Image (cartoon, rainbow, N blue to C red):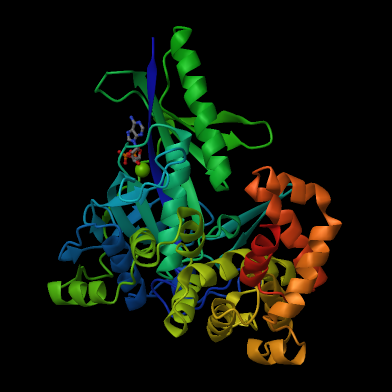
Length: 484
Ligand code: ADP
Ligand code: MG
């Protein structure tokens, strides 16, 4: 029998607000334990929560990015459980009236359909709600230490419909989610720092069957590849269980990345009863149409839409747009350069082939940030102009680029100082061409026997002899004249 897997994700993302969700205490990853707290964070008697406006605004922005409905009213509920990472013994969350409902995330699958823009798949969302995070426990021997710095920081939980069917779709979903949230400046989505956390729900069913199978919830997925490996393993495990006549138990399992397996944590009978009820300390929030629309008006152009535009407007290939467009800063940088000198392909190539490589070499811990680059958009525009107007060759342009990268000097000055101008003195070039023809009888013979490509070897010799400064168009003309 053939089986189909069904997957739904629950993704928590930490919002990058300056302060916590219900009190003006900042949050910083890696701060000295228990220094970022106050009476509200610690849940001391009488302390009252006050809503963080920016967290609401950010959640609405996320909802608009993914085409969710933003209901007029959302409200706050207490979710109870007793665990030392949560000082109040309840978490303030949203139960039946979340801030965003429905929606969809556009995903780009690997394979042949990949670069067909406008043909991406959509993954349906159920809801997005806003809640506070809990503290962090560290277990050392028989002791457990608790740090409440993270407690009370704002999280959004993005819940998908059971709408994915394999690890590739899960990978593409998480990548797209992260790209959009980074783009809009919502969160850095660094899974290692816990800024993005994902639980996966997985079931399998006979192909063609409409009813969903019994689901397993998978936890402890610490990286995007971890999610994908865990999901793949679990699909295989469930199919093998069914094939050997066993039933799937509804349970929570943990992904053991080192062992490459999933391990049972608790069964359905042990499931929590959270005793949700409305939080009496917080008023429901009203989101008027005007407010919602004013936030929509500020929304940046989204990466897949930008990619399609770059393709249409600048005629850039997929391989280039897929590097530039997911990064807002980089695509703004590109467009600024193009607005100064209209050679989009050349400028895009400088960015993708030279700039990104040099930034990654120059960085000590990852790439050097674009903002710290000495090469500014106006440099690339001037460089493109020099090549476009045949003042320098594209070979020399790379040398000039490296010099700008080191010094931040203007390309015109570098070309002047280092005497890098292309040689357009035809009589000098003619001399070099004649020498190259004499020194390369084999290539000459091949060219004369009809192999047009053979001329490139001779051109290369002329270029070398001129130290890269001879104008390639003039070389070509002279060589063809002499060889004829
Ligand atoms: P629970 O009440 O156990 O939290 P929900 O109905 O809230 O379950 O769903 C949680 C997540 O599990 C959602 O992402 C949903 O898409 C997914 N899900 C629900 N049922 C299944 C299933 N049978 N197979 C796979 N995923 C499922
Ligand atoms: Mg759930």
